[in-house]
Image 1 (cartoon, rainbow, N blue to C red):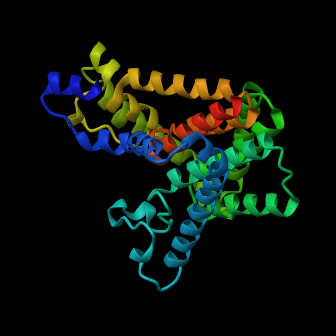
Image 2: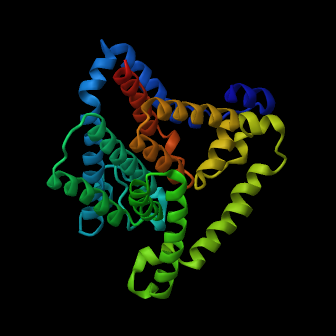
Amino acid sequence: MSLYYKSLMYGNVDYSHAIAFAFGYLLFLFSYLLITNYESFLINYFPSFINYIIWISFLSISWGHVVLYTDIPDNWQLIYRNELGHDYSNRPSGLFGQPSINIAILLYCYALRLYLIDINKIRSNIRSSLLYLSLIVLSVYFQKTGTGYLGLILFPLLLVAGNIIIATMASIVFFIALYIFYSTYSDLFGTFSNKLSYEYFASSFDYFFHSILGTYIDNLTFFDFIFGIDDQRNIEIDFGLIYILGHFGIFFLILLLLMISYINKTAANKYVTFSFFLLLILSMHYPTIIYPTSTIIFLMLMVYIKRLKV
């Protein structure tokens, strides 16, 4: 509907965005039709798939870290994108080509792993738990991304609080305290403190209000808000919510949130709730929630949960 509206109103459509983010839905549909008894297949293999994503993400990030800090050519990374510029020159491209995306999907999968352990009544030994937690922490350290730092702050608070509202309030207080502490001792903590500096936040807010939000609301019509704006206005990807609204409109966003609400209500499990809450918060920066991998995972999760409830 978004593509039809843009074609009708503006006469030009950037199909690359639609194709890229529809790929997850198409791949899921293809696999659903191709694999006999797909629901039973997921019951057997979905937990292994989640573990696979965690491991391959960690290994690709670790390999990128080795490449960047040795004499190995940078283009030996699994995904090498030279056009990303200086800000990414000391951070591994990882499995998905972007540090924030890598970490958001990794944390999402880690939360789902906890759900799968809980729902299947698996006793996870201390060694295994420490191993997977170490993979997450090391990945965040190698990626040097504010999204990862925020995720590490939110994750334990969500689990301990057991309530989204309480956890959110605790996270805000904790983050402010952390900001004050690292601002005071900024020289000791390098990249981490840079992500928490006043200058970083000020420049980010300035960029958001003047470049991103300004581009979106300029001559915005009601139907633009519903179905997305002219692709020629080029909404940057740095602020996920505005990117989704700009390219696909509020109609798509509402459908996406309804699907997530349905999965969450059907699962009735705190780890699923936490996984989606994390994904939504971390997608406020880069729109991880509409990336093909995220789409495939939560469509598979929807089928998996539905099958368990039968």
